[in-house]
Length: 216
Image (cartoon, rainbow, N blue to C red; front, side, top):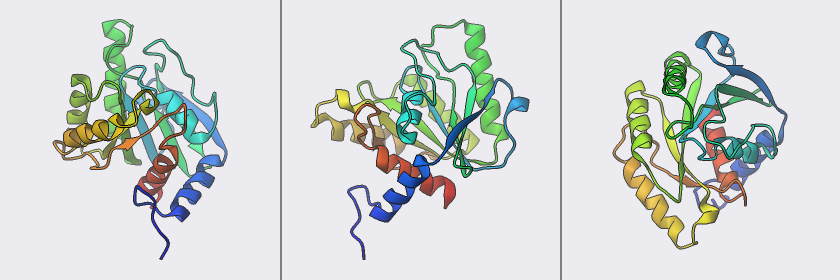
């Protein structure tokens, strides 16, 4: 029997996911309303997190592209729900950031309403990756989002971003702290994955996790 990797994934699973994410990936829709979202043709995995947590950078790293999803150092850059078709098998969905986006209160409420409508209206949604900046840990806005996902009965998983900013010995502590939070939420996946869009750390494992959650 093949040996499993450090995260319990077989090399064949890692390779199959690598090939999937190396396939064609195209922007198909930027939805500002439920009506403008694509039809329910493919399973979906969405990315949520505080403004500037690195959602767009992570989508780019997963697909091996630099500019598939637009990135910005200004919080609140993603202002709609962006859908990317991955090899005709899966939608990757980039949600607007929450938290400290530098926009009006009315705009924040509009984004929140849009995200809520997405959660309620997408039966093809298989999992949400809730991105947490590993340098700062889980914040109150993250906990609020996780409670909303619990209520919506949407499966989600905490993904730590920017672990390249941490000392090597601090990464296990950041993972343990996030896993402790995950255990308090019924819809949360128990495993927390650390990643770095800059160095590629953890990207292969996240690809395999997404493929498993969405396609199996």
